[in-house]
Length: 224
Image (cartoon, rainbow, N blue to C red; front, top):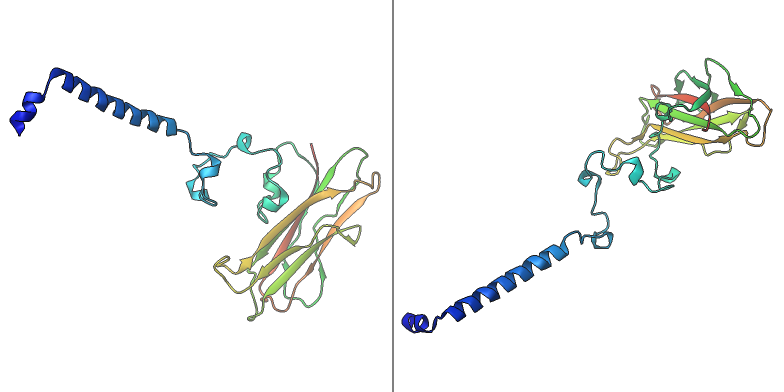
């Protein structure tokens, strides 16, 4: 059998076989090259790219689409006064002393210095309020809920209250505590020339532990 094959093995047969091999191999390489850079967004399974798969510092400012980061996408308490843009004009700021959270009725949040300013026409002022808890917990099995309500000239701010809470731990929140929160909004747009005095009140609950407290910080800034 081998001798018969060798008798039929000619130069032309060898060259033809090599040409066929190269053609098939080259086609495979061409196909592989054609597939390079072909993983588009449509081929990614939902939630396939997790935070752990993104290289550190890979998502830079230039790679974020304009207006892509909205209020709803910012974690509560993530933007604090220390992260305000350099050069932002801080008009007034104050931080309260700790306020107990286990009271049965609303209490006034005291600041060491008055927080007031006078809006000017054509200038956009912002009020930023941040609440942070210490030892926030439940006194029993019921959830503890604390509300911080900013006041403007003695009236509740139009923004939603800042809510902190302690509850039964879960897989979503193993700590069972939402211990900080904040909000920012324009203020005095329709009150040019009228002094705005800022305050706050806290509504706690007897369901909160007696050693829990909340500190409130307020800042008035002018946007660039």
